Length: 390
Image (cartoon, rainbow, N blue to C red):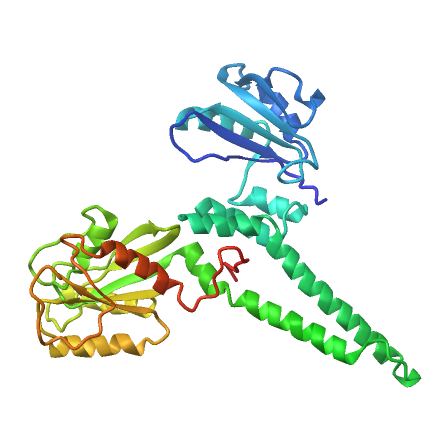
């Protein structure tokens, strides 16, 4: 155990109004400091993992709030240290008042993530589990929660430890044989060693190959809508989100800047980006929008190229489409829009789907196709472990 000299305290629940807020203390003096402001049972004499009703009073004896104090004695706590959690009434002012009262007893404000950091230092969590705590807190989709819980269970750490032990065992046998090289004694079967190390190497490669899938499940699929002005990008964004997120008019070039919105489908987070139509323009504002559109395209996980089915394919659009196809590592969907209008006879594109965002035609099919394309060629299995960070 690594004993921390300072006792730390912080609000463990989000700031705002609610039924309760929780203030956490951790450290060698957590119980002693809590007793200075908690009036009820003598905490130091109570059993671990027990809850006690009482009042928080300041140094002048003024009652701040009625609370429930929960006690976790070392080493049976999240951090491995003596830990006290005080549940007070929710609300910004009362929660801050309770925290300030605790800090005046001698505790200091915890740094961001410091409770988990101490849990890691004290061997309560291994590194991948500590990182998974942050992933779980910030998860924005069902699959991100599943991936974080998977790492939090310690399965990834066990797998890495197993790799390490196998390599150590192989190294030990080789070194032993080198020490007795003049004795002509064989301690290790070379074929078995080669087979073992090959299997370990292959298993590590398979695990590393899950990173791309893990990254988009954790951070979301950066999905960029591109196409000429008035191709229906903003209308499609609004239709998918089910709200008027982007301004839509019949005037080409209405969208001047990229518009971002988070959207979750079938447990997977998509970070939708509506871009300014790419075209040559002398308008300085629109030109900056086009530059930002191109920047978004270069970092996209999924590109959805939209073409108005009612208009012919202009030369500028052909050049733009050719640029899209050069990004061979980025999944690309070619979607025909405004299918409710008459289709031009001069289109020579192979469409993945034809839709009408205005009428809702094939929108559900598009959503399914987006998920399928985003995970295409990714090493993803809902039951397998995923690497989500470096």
